[in-house]
Amino acid sequence: MSNNNPIIYLLADQERYILGLSSYPELEIKFHLEKNKFPIKNSRLFFLTKQLSWGIAHYIFDQITDSAERQGKEIRENSFSTKILSIFWDVDPIGEIVDKKIMMINKILGKLKFKSKVSELKVNIKEILDIKFPEVVEFEQVYKFIKGRKIYYNEIRQVLRENRVNVNDLNKVLVYLKLLGKLRVFPSVTYNNGDLTCQRCGNVDNLVKIECNYCNCEDYYCQECILMGEARLCRPLYLIPADNSLMELNIIEPKYRFNLTELQQEVSDKLIDFLYEDYQQALVWAVCGAGKTEVSFEIIADVLSQGGKVLFAIPRKDVVIELSERLKEAFPGVDIKALYGGSLDKYQWADLIVATTHQVLRYYQAFDLIVLDEVDAFPYRGSKILKRAIRYAKKPKGKIVYMTATPSEDDLRNLEENETKLIKLSARYHGHPLPEPELIEAKIEYDKESKELQLPQMAIDKIKLSIEQDLSQVFVFVPSRELVDIVTGKLIEYFPEVDGQDWIQGSHSQDLRREEKRESFLAGDYPVLVSTTIMERGVTVEKANVIVLFADLEYIFSEETLIQMAGRSGRSLKYPTGKVWFIGDRITEEMQKARDKIRELNQESAEKGYLKYS
Image (cartoon, rainbow, N blue to C red):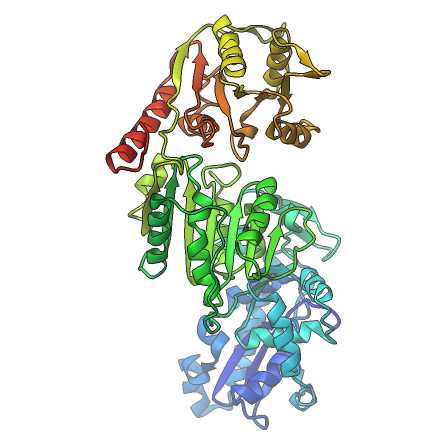
């Protein structure tokens, strides 16, 4: 056919008929004739429509057919009246079915305000017999590179180009893979019970009506996943599950930078047990700085050893890049790819994929194990779309390990409902308790209009104490980008320049020098970093104290956020105690809950003998 738009067809013999939707109907007809054993001599073929856009064709096909008709339905089941009438008159039951389907199609097209109507086109079956199926080596090679993906036609071409695979007729190969049950194809936006749904991300709300230049019709596209490629009503999306066969055992053992502690090894062993238990999900609740990444290495190795595929997903690009290097060090010889916006390996397969959570939208039933770190962090927390993406990326019998330092109450309540195993890593590797925050009620005078700020003297004293006495760096967290600049400017008044560089630097999500300042702080080039919550994760220095200003702003500083910020302190064996201060005009419930949760974890670790020092 001239393009990849589908038509609806009907194939029948004297006993049964089948309805299909295909962008290469001739190939499907030959498949049914040979594989489903429709007799060539007595079979009749009708094209019920011309080529239609995928969205319209799929909707019509869904409305006018049932599951039996799509698989092959016996004619005598279709119409009792036809059966009776055929005793007395020369009745054509197939003709009746065709007429009925045409009438239904035209009725739907009328509702959709299509001006043209359709009529059946009877096709000579003998002309189809000369069509050849793709060679086995050709369709197996294509499947090898596209399996486990949720992908558009142009992306399939890109995958094959990058892997140097030449295909004469890609549409034919894809239709044949569909017939073999290796893939499914849908419009990327579909009508579902009268509502529109994006098949790529599952969004039902943020769909925008347009006049489409591709199909020249009224169309819709999804705004939620547009950065991954435009999902449209007229654009087909291919869902290609990976096969479930595991290869022969090839023992892989991770290489660690350090020996696991007794508690880390216990958690690692529990994860291995989880792999062979009935649980589908595990939640690893690990305190900040406990080394939760390393405890996942054994379960990753176990799956890789059996020829399985593993995804390690994280919300942030910078951590993806950093972690992929750590994993390459831990698993030498294993093919590992990092996937994020702008990465060059977007269409390359690997045994172990490290990806941002948004990139998971590209996969479909691809992984035997998914490890999802920082499940409490933006953008994963609260995103139904990303949660669906993780589930879709897992093979039907695959497992998911969620990792977090701050599970929400909903996470904990849902443990039993979701068949989730809870595994706790409640102590840091060095055996010291988590630094417990000191809650300080002190007036911070700030005028939003004039931008005038007066910090309490005790906050200045805490910073001076940290630098001069503890020889420590300091994280100063504030609730907004505007306050980063204002607080930074105010603190500079109290601290000198050293070798032409300010002791105080400020950074936030819109700061063009954010990465530069982050790296300089990690290198110890300056002692005080003022930041928004953007620096609450993934930044570890050997000696650090933490101050949270305006900590009473509960809509910014939730219990989970405060725990993450406190977790920047005391992570290193060189300075395992650390100090944390939450400062606000009042002591809020969130501040108290954060402190109490940290105390509870310390108490639990002490009771179980995980703390060497207390």
